[in-house]
Amino acid sequence: MKNSILYLVAFLLLGAGLTAQKISSQLENKVIQWRQEIHQNPELSNREFKTAEKIAAHLRSLGIDVQTGIAHTGVVGLLKGKRPGKTLALRADMDALPVSEQNDLPYRSKVKATFSGQETGVMHACGHDTHVAILMGVAEYLAQNNDFAGAVKFIFQPAEEGPPQGEKGGARLMVEEGVLENPKVDAIYGLHINSATTVGQVKYKSKGIMAAAQRFVIEVQGKQAHGSEPWMAVDPILISAKIIDGLQTIISRNSKLTKEGAVISVGSIHSGIRFNIIPKSARMVGTVRTLDEDMKQLILRRMNELVPQIAAAYGGSATVNISETAALTYNDPALTQTAVKSLKKALGEDQVVEMRAVTGAEDFSAFQEKVPGFYFYLGGLIQGNTPEEAPSHHTPEFLVDDAGLIYGVKAMVQLSLDFLN
Image 1 (cartoon, rainbow, N blue to C red):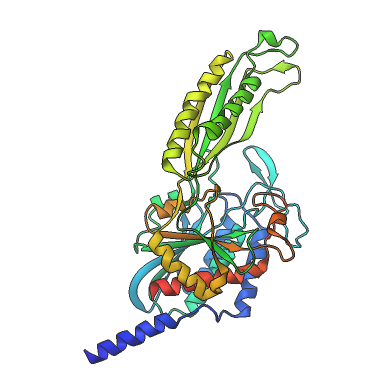
Image 2: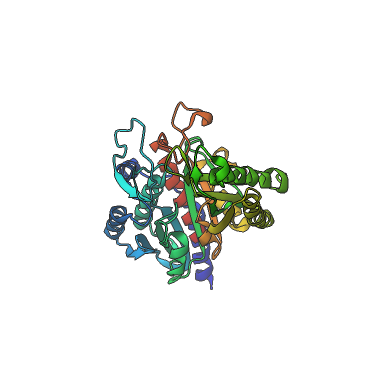
């Protein structure tokens, strides 16, 4: 009994003393190099073939058990500690965006691809390249310092930005294919680089941190006529404009914005082919973002009511089809409380900042629907810039500072060691 107690005390002291501070500059340099290589060779959702090969080869070189082809191109690595215990999952998304890069990085992307039938540039315009490189670095550190209990499951996820039309993909498909089983995952952590957050700093929020997101498609039917005789037409472009205006009244007049934020945005509208022809139809595609379930249901109900009625008022017809793309990204309160302590240990008390919820969305929420999860933001602000000057995510000018990557490695390592030990 005495020996058992001494062993337990020693074990607890060991776990309490583990820190992520002693991460070598050699590993930091590797992480930066991986990031730049991935940035220069981006791949669109469900097409992350070379990225997956690079990740799998690295994990295998560390002696980690590797599965590939999960949810098309996903890679999962399992690293076991030296004692039985819980299983923690760490997630990084791999996909790039159909954006043509416009900056002066020496490793900027010149890749072209076809997206939705159009040729486009391809760019890591949201920082997923940094997420992959960070998690590869975490895997290397933990594989070389595996004196922990339980296991770590490294989840490299495709198609966070959404799979191509007509395909399945992303976190939800990984969950369907059993990524949280064998062994069963007890909790999951994820991060996102942020171009407007100071390097060395992380931001978090308990409970809802990112919005639920829906994709909608509105099809408007009118009557075609010569552009010189609009009275002979039922103009679907005019109807579309009235619908867009009506959608915004749902936000400004139906949504209780003092409770939570909400957004309806039309991101694409297509109609017509010639300057002097009023076309027969129009098509709009957009997104809804909400941070409250009741508000979400009200907004979706009002969209279904308003859209056909507005079209009918102008002599046409319209249908609206709404599909879920991501649930609310919800940080488990108890897990958040312990995670914040780990982040402060790794980065310093002043570097861990509480934030307000944002209307961006993340399919990391699909994992959080099944197991407790914690998701946070990592600083990547370019040195010398103010947050207001930072290029926005999803734009051709997007930039983040490689100096922020090591803090992501430290944060994830510390979170892992503290959770498992």
